[in-house]
Amino acid sequence: MLAEEISLGMRVRYPRTGTTGAVVRIERVAGNQFAELDSTHLLYRIDLLIRAEHTKQSATSITEDAKEVIRREREFAAGSGLQDALKNIDQSCEGGG
Image 1 (tube, rainbow, N blue to C red):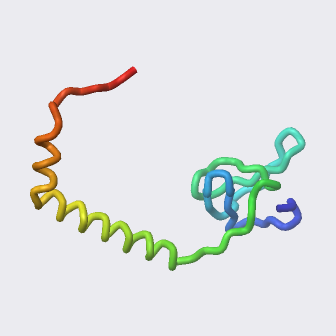
Image 2: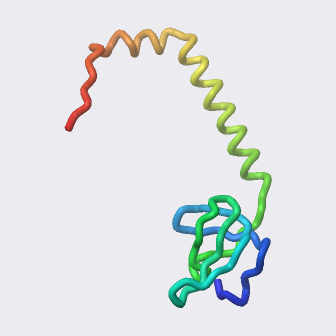
């Protein structure tokens, strides 16, 4: 993204880590321009940022997926699967290394 395209309050994403946030400050350091994001309060090089769109749909699907995982884990813990798994370990702590 070019420095001229970015403005305060704009939602951007840093694709290397997936960090998303709104720009709260723009600063020049050692010849490079950086933007501070409200989500991390860290500086990111502007030329490495991309425009981000806020979507509620992905957050909803993540919540639904988490609910499904919790339901399966509860069923596993309540059933005989957990007890069978515990019988097959020797209670030693093999840390390796």
